[in-house]
Image 1 (cartoon, helix red, strand yellow):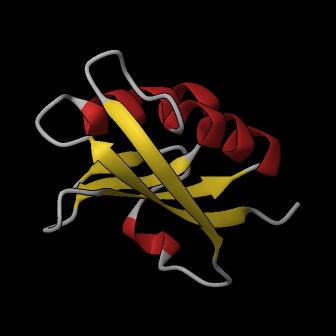
Image 2 (cartoon, rainbow, N blue to C red):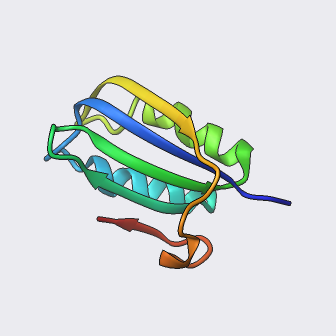
Length: 95
């Protein structure tokens, strides 16, 4: 089965509130590979690679985030190709 690949860009109060840490915890529990990184404009970018059902579960969680965050918007974009060699299967990094 081919893995699905999505980039999410999360807006709101999502930096300096543990958002990336909690995203990694959620992704690891779902068996999703990828990363979460802060963007210079205050948003957080999340790359998620894995089963589409699990990715959709992560997407639902990203729209709420941890209690310390206030999510205003999540942009979801499917991508065709990514450098999957930057992480092992099930590995989710904080960049």
